Image (tube, rainbow, N blue to C red; front, side, top):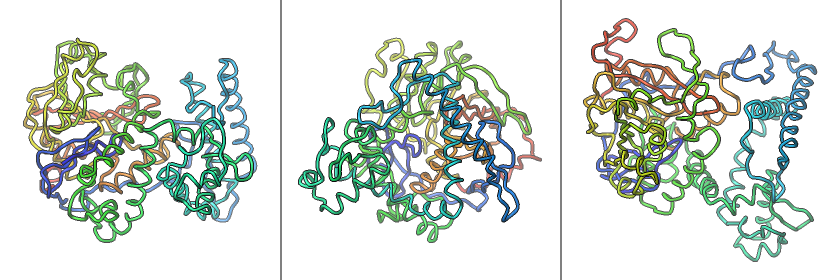
Length: 543
């Protein structure tokens, strides 16, 4: 049975109790066998996320203006706050505009021939761009007001519905890229009736999808043009509007029926597509080649976006590490996000667990010329991986592929690093602990277990733009897989539950990167602190 790799969220390896082949890939993966359904022994073992906290002071990770909450009924949004936001918007926009003018770059626009993305910019200009985004959103919210904000938040799904219809009926492809078309002409090319066609296109125009230069005449914008020219973005829209969107409408049903919310087969997705207690999402997709292909392309679109590039692993930049010790302060350094210099010097081995077609290893092998790489995934994924793995023969010969299901014991013993990228956030606690425990028999003293995933910060500590995306991803994981994004404490807890001798080394994140490196080292000779980590807490899951 085929399975799809949910890049920034679901990973290719989803167990199924009813099918021997049940996992996702970058394209399509196949599972040799499936673990039994796992149920935590208490609610404590199913990690629930932080409740939102009010930010009373300006945060230290960005300089957006924050409004301190005041007594009920008091006016806390004073005119001076709104003026300060407006002034910030003006000042930071001038910096971005000056950069575009100095470099002779076209100004940001939604005109049909405008660039689709911002260019790579210096750090200070990128920071100004984000300041404008944050401040305009805050000023917008203030001008809308609390009641109207809540009222119309309940209609946010209308944009998704509109995008679903535009994408499903291929309306963007029917509009000429270099001209316009009347609604009557457009109607003749689609099965939609004239009323529904007009209402969908005109709602899209409120989100800058299409424009109506004259009544009844439709033309492209830069945004709608992308639905014609970018098949990966089109796949992203299709996956989110036709798979995730229906599933999200049934999360409430799933939580009412199955409040423990850990099973891969009792999710909003399972309720929406009538697969409760039958199979996880990855198995469902594996039965439909076109649907599986769409999800694979959608994930490629996402991982090519800002903050997810593989280059963050090896680029020398500013990194911040937290949680290296109980109560330890954060430390800042300059270097790559994933530092493999020691392993490179001694000709070590890195195992990419669930590594799909080896894209991460191919990138790492370009920088680290002395390391041997083993890419593990399901048999069908390994069989479909490109050969050679890299155009550079010196890189390609150091990358080998191996069929392996990470719900079984790790076969490569004595490696220096076991690397899991986009894996753990696909699984609730019982499954995640099992994945780590299956590494233990293979670990030598000093072996590094490196997770490359989102790591939630405390509410209000994240860049607001990134926080909305990452916490949105957390809800996506709940919707599709009863899985979750985790914070530092959650990752530390996973390692504690997986084995007594994992020593948690902390969480490292690079500037401008949304993903983190979460690391533990296997130290069987380390003394166990039974006060802070009592043994019964580490071994209570019935796996």
